[in-house]
Length: 131
Image 1 (cartoon, rainbow, N blue to C red):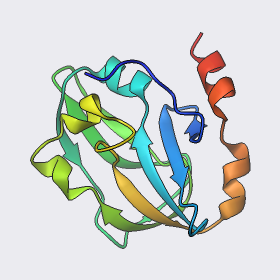
Image 2: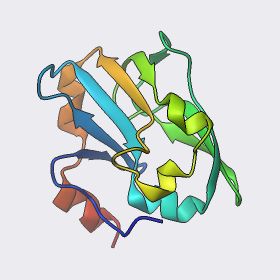
Image 3: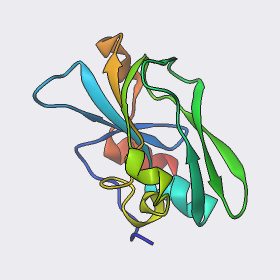
């Protein structure tokens, strides 16, 4: 399991999801769950992703992560259309625990409203919310 970390270049949703905006294309973002979320879940054994082309809505569930403890909804931190799903998680869902900000990413999304990022938390604000 990865050590606790919250990369400063990411944006965070209060429901423990992170967003990495593509520097080459600010209309595209990668979503995942934070170290806090994967730690609370415990060992992840299954990721049930949305289909490519699915529209996701900010603050609404878009996928499920199953751990040895429970099945949890994953909340969309921003709205948009699923461009890509991390297919490697089908065979290795433990990557969500081992590398939540790298190999454990969940989906890539074409954002429908880039302005929604203003409602997300920066790293200091997110970590303060965990205290």
